[in-house]
Length: 243
Image (cartoon, rainbow, N blue to C red; front, side, top):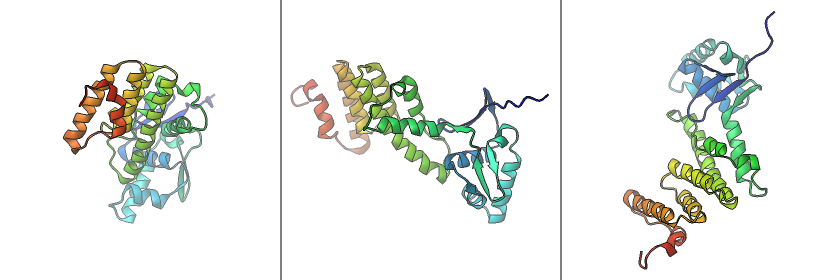
C-alpha cells in the first residue's frame, strides 16, 4: 500500500533559490523557478494575467500566457505540490514553508522595542539568517523592490541584535552581528557605530579605533565625506589631540 506520508516542502529565497522536499533538493527549469519564487513572495492568490505580465514583461500577452503554461507544465512532483493552481489564480500551497517569511518574523521580533528580544532569537543562527540577501543575482524588477525592502529590514535588525548582545555581555556575538551589517553595507554609518560599540563594550579599544579609521578612509575615498560627529564621539577619547 502506498504511504500517505509526504515530505515537508520548503522554498528558500535567501542566499539564492532552493527547493526542498524533506532532505532532498529539487531542481527545476529556470522559468518554473521564477514562477515559484514570485508566487512565494506574494503569499496570496495571484491572478494568472498578473503572473504572466510580471514574469514575461517583454512578451505579447499571448506569448506570456504560453510561457506561464509551459512553466506550470514543467512542474512535477514536489514543485507541483507547492502550488494550488486555479483556473484564474495561483497561490502557494498553505503547507509550503518559505524562509523569507520566518526571517521577516525574526527581524520584526528583534526590532520590536516594546518587548525584550526573545532569548531564542539571541543566537548566532539569527545572525546567519539576517546575513543573507533575497535572491542575489536576480535582477527582475519584481525581485529588486522586495530585495531592497528586506535589505533595509535586515540591516536594522542586525544593528538592534548587536545592541541586544552587548546588553547581554555576549560581545563576540555582538561583533558578529554588527560585522554582518557592515559587510552588507560598508558605508553604513550606523553599522560601523554598532561594531565600534561592540568592541568598546569588550574593552578592545584598538579594534574600535581601527574600524573607525578604516571606515573614515573609505568614506573619504569613495564619497568625499567625513564621519558624522556622532560617530567621531565614539572614539574621541581614543585618538590623540587633533586626531
